Image 1 (cartoon, rainbow, N blue to C red):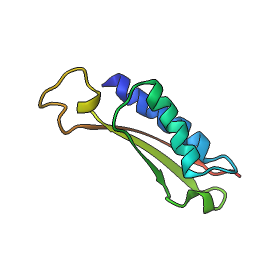
Image 2: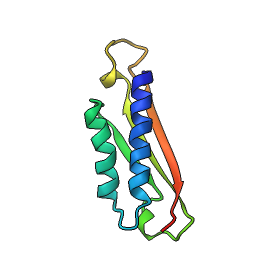
Image 3: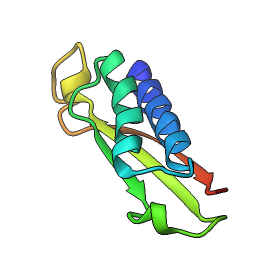
Length: 97
């Protein structure tokens, strides 16, 4: 689960780095996140960008990318402990451009 948590945090960090670029789109943010998720074999992840319309926000707006994934589908072990657990990682940066 530590590996999963770290993977989600790295994906969120790469996503937020993409989000604060001048010509960022939600597609570019998701692509940055998915590159990490795919390389680390994370299954069933969801990516949330806040605020939703981050591209139209003024400079100095805080933008957050949250990446979450179910523990059960990303665990080597099955059982009741991981059945409902969702692990997440997030990163926040200020829009500068």
